[in-house]
Image 1 (cartoon, rainbow over the protein chains, first blue to last red):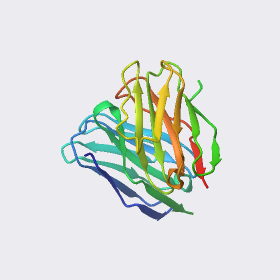
Image 2 (tube, chains in turn yellow, blue):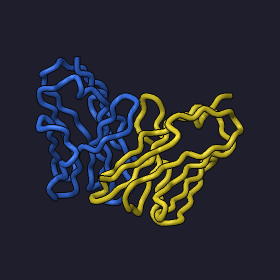
Image 3 (cartoon, rainbow over the protein chains, first blue to last red):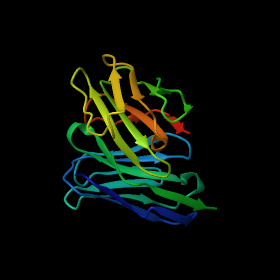
Length: 110
Length: 113
């Protein structure tokens, strides 16, 4: 059974600081997704990582994938308040059924 | 272009009643997925449809849950004899095909009293 674990589950940080969210998964998978969810809203796709060593960046967010370590990271650079949201990683296996991590609730304080 | 749409956005029902939730995928997307998100938790896979293939129902939590899809368009998730533990946000997603990026709808918030 595929399991996906994120840590931390909750992150409070000051604006301007850097931090990394970790996503570990239990079985082989060659694709990893990061989503953002604002309160009461649906999921917004941030990154799709499809190969070992893949790195993608969008603004202050950078995601990477290490399929050998079964680890993906979401790095936040110089956080701003607008990044406050819950971030989910997810990975898929047969049929692209996605298994989600429990989410990391990020609060960026002004 | 239009994204995934779901209706209703909110549904309050009494325990024991049946409910139907609707999902309109992005036009041209052959794959459609249903997920459930309980308060403060991640998403749980329920079921997916790919083209005309038999759906993968492996995530449905009980036989009270069923889903149908008409061709490569609208899908309906039906919950019979609802229970309080069915209260959650039900999210639908679609993708061009299997292994493609999934785009999520706004969800239906179901409250069972």
